Amino acid sequence: MQTVAPSKPATGRAVPPTVKLLINGEFVDSRSTQWRDVVNPATQQVLARVPFATPQELNAAVASAKDAFRTWRKTPIGTRARIFLKYQQLIREHMKELAAILTAEQGKTLPDAEGDIFRGLEVVEHAANIGTLQMGELATNVAGGVDTYTLLQPLGVCAGITPFNFPAMIPLWMFPMAIATGNTFVLKPSEQDPMVTMRLVELALEAGIPRGVLNVVHGGEEVVNGLCDHQDIKAISFVGSTRVGTHVYQRATLAGKRAQCMMGAKNHAVVLPDANKDQTLNNLAGAAFGAAGQRCMAASTAVFVGEAQRWIPELVEKARGLRINAGAEAGTDVGPVVSCAALQRISGLIEKGVAEGAKLELDGRNPKVAGYEKGNFVGPTIFSGVKPGMAIYEQEIFGPVLVILSAATLDEAIDLVNANPNGNGTALFTQSGAAARRFQEDIDVGQVGINVPIPVPVPLFSFTGSRASKLGDLGPYGKQVILFYTQTKTVTQRWFDDAAVSGVNTTISLR
Ligand code: NAD
Image 1 (cartoon, protein in one colour):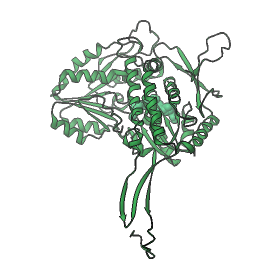
Image 2: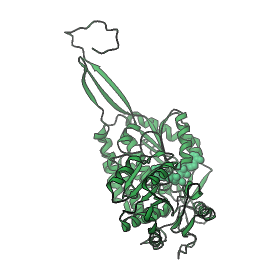
Image 3: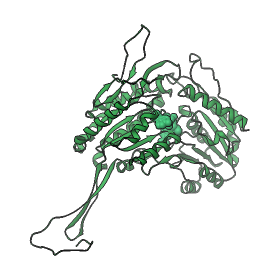
Image 4: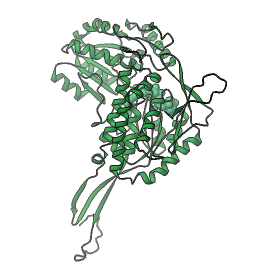
C-alpha cells in the first residue's frame, strides 16, 4: 500500500505512517503543517497521520484534473467501461484486505466492512455498464427533413466530499460514475478514516484510470470550502451531516456549481400490531444497533402502534443479547463508535434523555470489553416513552441508541414521521397490503422499506431523500447521477437537399 507509506523514524520511536495525496497520478507527501491522527477506535492505536492539504496542493489537484479532462472527455465509452470492469474484479480480489483496513480505522465488524465495500462495488459494476446508460434521445422528422437528438456531455472537474461512516461505499458512489461519464475528479475523503479509501484509489489506478483523472486531497473545513469556491470545479457531491451539507450546498451553488448533498437522518421504523413479531424485532435490533448505529439509514427511532407496544420487553432482551467487542473479533455484533468525541456526545445525549423523562429500558453505557478497555464502546441502549421535543428525538444520535415512541393509529404514526425535519429512510412492519400501500403513498421520506429495515436502493435505482436529509434534485448513483454528471445538449439538424431550395423563413417555426 503506497498511499500510507511509513515515515522516516526521527528519534528511534515508532512513527506512524503518513497518508498521501494523489495529484496528477502520483501519490505524494503533503507539505502541510496541519495533521491529525487516524486512530483505531477499539484500541486507540494511532494507525497513520493524515494531512490537511494546503491551498497550493488543492489547486494542483484541480489543475491536474482540468488538464486530464481535455483527453478523458473524448476517450471512447468502451475504454472507460472496461476500466470499471477491471476495477470491480480488483475490488473483489482484495475484499478481505480492504475490510481489515476499514475495520481497523472505523471500528465496524469485518462482515459489515465487507458489506460496506460490497455496496460500493455494486456501483462500480453499474459504472461498467456506462455504454447503455449515457445515451441520448433521437426524434426524426421533427420538421421537414429535420432531426433532433440529445448529447449527454461530461461537465469537467467534479469533486466529492465523504463522511466517516461508509469510507468505502460512499467514495465508490461518487468517483466511478463521475469518471465513467467522462468527467475528472477530486475526492476529499473523511479525515477520520481515509486509509481504506486510499487503498480503493490505488486499485482504481491499477485498473487503468489515467493520470490526473482521479485526484485526492485530504483535510477538513478549509479544504471543503476551497473545493466549493474553486472556479474550475463544476459539480460537488457531498455526503455527511445536515449542518455541513447545508453549508456546502449554499456555498457551492453560490459559486455557480451543481451540488447534491445527502445529509443527516432520524429514520423511523413504524411497527403495526399485525406485523410478524419475531421477524420485526430481529430486523429492528439489527437495523438499530448494527454498525453501532452509525449508519445514515440506521433505524434509530421506532414507533410502536397500539398493541405492538407490548413487544418492547422482548426487543430489549434481543438487544441485551448482542455481543459488544472489537470489530476485528469473530462473532461481534456491535463494535466501537468512531472516536472518543463521538462516545462523549452519545453518552451526553443518553444522560439528557434520562433527565428529560424518557424511560431508559436498556443502558449500554460503560460496557466492559475484555482486552479492549480503551475502546470507544457503548452498548445497545433503548429508551421508551420518548416524545417530540426531547433532545434524543430531535437530534441525530448516531450511536447504538434506539428511541421508542408510541402512536394509537397508522395515521398518527405517519403524521409523526412527516413532522420530523429529516426524511432519509423509514420502514413499515405489517402484514397488511392496504396499510403498506397507504404508508408508501403518504410518507414524505426518500427511502421507504416495507418489512425491509434498511432500504438502501441498489444502483439500478438512485439514493434519494426528503426535506433536511437532502439538497439538490438528483441522487448520487443510479439513473439520476448520469444527469447530475452530464450536461444535456440538444442538436437539431437538417441536411439540405440541393434540389429543393426553400425561401427565407422569418418565423420561429421549423418547416
Ligand atoms: P460530517 O458532516 O461531520 O463530515 C462530512 C464531511 O464534511 C467530511 O469529509 C468532513 O471533513 C467535512 N466537514 C466536516 N466539518 C466541516 C465544516 N465545518 N465545513 C466543511 N466541511 C466539513 O459527517 P460525518 O460525521 O463524517 O458523517 C456522519 C453524518 O453523515 C451523519 O449525519 C449521517 O447521517 C450522514 N450521512 C448521510 C448519508 C446519506 O446518504 N444521507 C450517508 C452517510 C452519512
